Length: 168
Image (cartoon, rainbow, N blue to C red; front, side):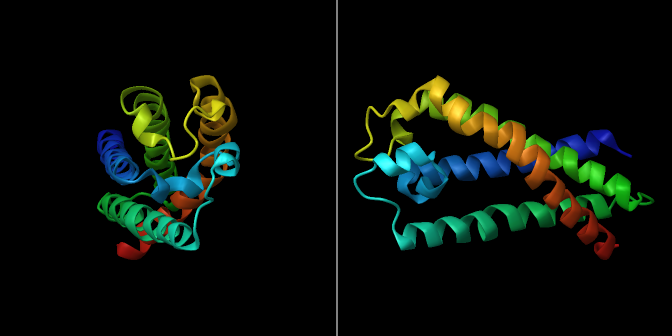
């Protein structure tokens, strides 16, 4: 297995995911509103609209996950001789790169640091859920230490390994 290629592809995937997500939320945080912690969603004077929810899911599936899945699959298909298990492991590592990048870049550096005010939903200014400790404890850490490693990464790695075999 070419670990350098796997990690570089994982970093490229993480960059795409995080920069595209940051661009969307910095343009209009309400477009990412369905992915905010439930306490902030409940505190908002205007909950996410049906069109915002629809945009969010179309964007997540067609704009984020599908291109990353295809990119990762094509990259792994070019590595001759890898078994399905090796392809799965490589895919898992790549999706974990995305996960760690999301935690450090979006939830840490941007959300809690550089662009903190740009991530706030109108009407929820001053909500305690935006504080670093609450955001991390109630949203970011459960998502990035449980949901992604135990569900999202294995599912995406399975799909990626399967597509890589089909691409050969």
